[in-house]
Image 1: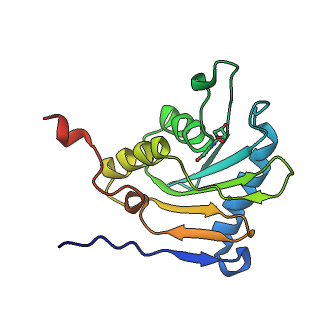
Image 2 (image 1 turned 120 degrees about the horizontal axis):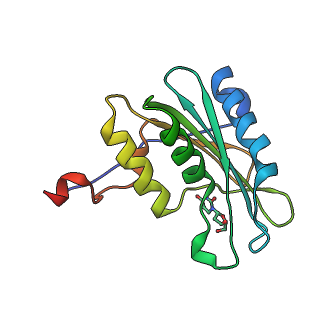
Length: 156
Ligand code: THU
């Protein structure tokens, strides 16, 4: 038998670094731009790039449901469409229909996208996801969220 283990940290905001806290603040601010009239579940994301620049995103829904996009992909695609800078850190936060903190645990499609960008750069992408207690789940490498993943080498 083989075993895969992942290591993560659960921390309050105060336990995180100033840089991490500031990225979380940017993700929280990005909640305002969410277009989520169908789920009323608002998600905000902020992506910190190697040069220190930050790109934010939020979930964008559509009456034709599959046409919408998650917050972290909106942020990542925006960032990657503008620069080749490696990604250092991604923060994601969510608010439920009542406006309370909710689990912002990335969906499988977003994990797939984050994994590919991580594979293409030399450094790891760290991820911070808000939870329903107002704490943050932190992983040093987004790829740990998607074991046995399909990736570009599989195509060759
Ligand atoms: N959503 C995100 O933005 N990120 C995630 O990782 C999970 C889900 C959005 C998609 C949709 O607009 C709403 O949350 C409810 O699924």
